[in-house]
Length: 334
Ligand SMILES: NC(=O)C1=CN([C@@H]2O[C@H](COP(=O)(O)OP(=O)(O)OC[C@H]3O[C@@H](n4cnc5c(N)ncnc54)[C@H](O)[C@@H]3O)[C@@H](O)[C@H]2O)C=CC1
Ligand SMILES: C[N+](C)(C)CC(=O)CC(=O)[O-]
Image (cartoon, rainbow, N blue to C red):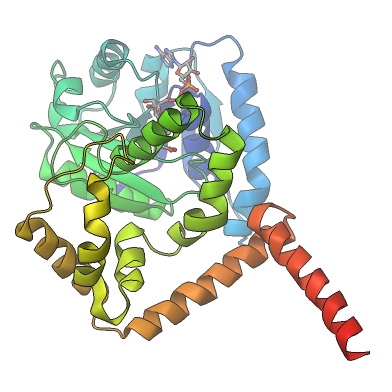
């Protein structure tokens, strides 16, 4: 199925993630056919779609915007039989997913692409019993699906190249940023990172070091603000100053061996150091360090402005700071 021919999308499983997919697709004009056996599924779906509306209006506000139609169906068969694209978002249990994917496979058009929202199961295993396994691809989104653009694309051993290509095109059509996971691994890329952080969080809590609120502050008032602008690699490249990533690795690499972390760090071989240095140099696109710093700083302020408008987190700090300074400076110069 070519991405540009897709009109009807089926969403199988309409919990947190499935409902988010439905909202994203409807707002971009695709008809959406949903199936979920939970007794309150339709109610939850309507609630999520209604709640998503104001954010979606801000993201895309086209005059006389034509939305897609929503159909709640009684079975997987009814939902998928006319679908051009199918997004499975059922519970994260391999056995359940395999059985649901087999049912989708049985009743859908053989050329309809099937994306699974799994956050860590291997596509080779998920497609193992399908009649047309070449059309299954992992398409792992992030909550809230109707706002966050990242979707990780990962094929299994039997996934066709064309499936990945057309899936990528489709997700771009619905305003997403597909990231191709080239090697099939449990947890893909993003959840490997998120879960490493989560593991440390659980250790900190378990060892009585900090509360959940303190840990969240440690994220959202610091590194969390930076992460929206650049990832950890570019952040550390800048933190190495003019001497860059090699200096950063030399200075801070050995701390990984201190007994801080509960996750064992890999050996800091020359190959690993070179890969870090070369990778970040390529990301820097030949631009000067100061140019990157200026970009980072502009974006950080804009994000804090956005948080301030919503009277939240680091934005509150920005507002308070402004008020304090306004008062202080007024008094000082009176
Ligand atoms: N919650 C999250 O933060 C994220 C979850 N995911 C993935 O998305 C998938 C769904 O997760 P959630 O939405 O969080 O779970 P959820 O528990 O909110 O929703 C799962 C839905 O699947 C439905 N379901 C169960 N059996 C079904 C069947 N036979 N046919 C159709 N629907 C069926 C359930 O009634 C439920 O509404 C999982 O694979 C998960 O790993 C991916 C990214 C983020
Ligand atoms: C907890 N989780 C593994 C389901 C999270 C994700 O998969 C992505 C996200 O939205 O953080």
